[in-house]
Length: 189
Image (cartoon, rainbow, N blue to C red):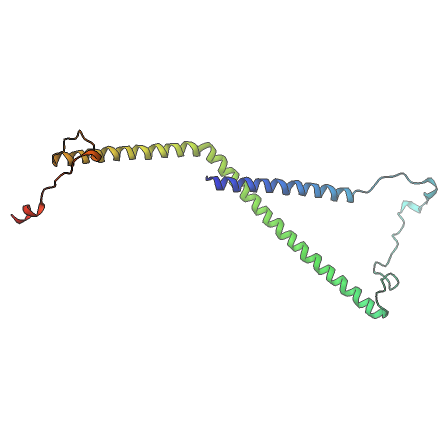
């Protein structure tokens, strides 16, 4: 694994940790808002009722739709106010739908990223356990091959120099110019 990959992975881990902490804080705030506060009732505000046969009282039917009196009057025309309220309600509902689908898409992408991150962690663990040994063995193997090739090249060079009449004591950099046989004379015969 290269240093760039390790840096990228470290950045992904940091970002994942940051997002998880941010999500936990958001969930804590959300749960705190949703929790109903517990308080003692004022004894004067308590109403005692009795029901026959222990049957619960019927739920009162309330109209959940706002009446015209509940609407904010932005315009002088009540029909225009009704249309505007209806339109804004539609826009808000569409925006909520769009945002929820974006959040769902982000959650799916986050799940994919987490899965990939787990796979990368497993690969890193296996590379850490096995990779160093494999990498060192491959370097040693390459080094042994290069040493063998170096010995072979030295012996070929030495044999060539001996054929040309070089003594072998002097190094190539300090050697005199070696005259090569004229191969044209041998070919002409």
